[in-house]
Image 1 (spheres, rainbow, N blue to C red):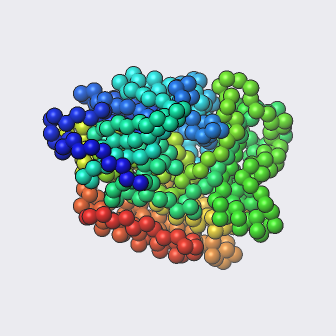
Image 2 (cartoon, rainbow, N blue to C red):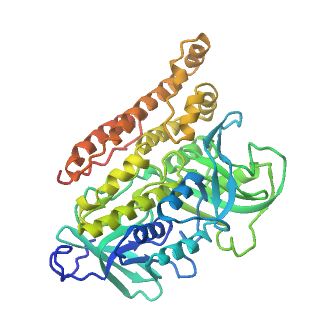
Image 3 (cartoon, rainbow, N blue to C red):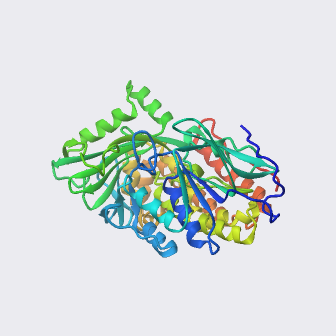
Length: 513
């Protein structure tokens, strides 16, 4: 797919060249709306920003036909980052419920780890309405009911987008100095990029998880805080109910819950074959809900805040973010850039951080008159060094966990996690599994009881250290990217081979230097 616009001269260098907009943001979801607000906040000259959203005006941010499907959890630190950097402060009703942290339970419910500190459970149907107003408040314009289907490219630059009106199919075409692709993991813009860039276009299917969730009100059942706790978001590791993924029970109140799970397709196929099952994602969610004795008589809530958003499923990327996020006149953000964290598929925090960083970089690039790959490159560097640097290591940890049985996960969480490891996990850093270095007889006995598990955990810790060190050296300029990419490819391919991830290979996208 290649869309070429008319020749209007050398874009960005001739004063008589006219664009429809300075920036077009394709996608009116979390990342798109926050990026538009951030550009407006940082732009000293009042950049003209257009947000193109396929949804009707009365339903901003809707992700799928099933609603605003999401786990809904966000850390307090992410929300405070928005307030500190672009002055956006959320409250009720978009922050629906507060939690003290996220607890991860072993399959047998006997071991728990505090995965993250204080946070909130959002109302994702209400939140986009507030985000639209935030973006409009700093000058963003909107066009609703339009899908972004392709990019206009000329002379190695992205010049705008083409699309269609959802209702009548009529053509849509607008030009801009910068196009920001925030149109989700299934974006056509990145996938059908009409020119060669450093950006990866496709994602390996093993790096996608099918996820689904229900929003229920319920009557309290058996009091068991390993199943439901109004003060904590709960994650259950369970290779039977959520093969290759995990289950979650996130409180939206004392008698209201966001409950669901995610699975990897190949892991689900293997699980079904092993147990002679034909379970689908909805089947597994129903089983998970039924097993939760703390939740009695679950029912879909009947109110305007939740209507049209009670059941849904979606595909989530669970790998490191795209190794390059920019090209001449183009940047990718949020799910379109594969930014959800590989270890827990959480995408709201990465969307917040990446959108603010991108908004600042784009505003500065416009003021400098340089929206080239080099002019937008600080987005790559700043995001990687501020937030993205551990994601490749979490990708390796996720791959390793997917090779383990429930019994091995129970054993590893019970005996191999130290207090320091828990602290690392709480800070979203990779655990070092320091207990495995202990020389006391009891620990050696435990290691000898599960030698392959111990070796695998130590390997992931060592590989993590190497990947984090490598990512912190992300090149300051495009010229150093090819060498950096080759180093990353080598480190990751070693892990894929070690864990025998069938047929998986690191994409080697090397364009120019």
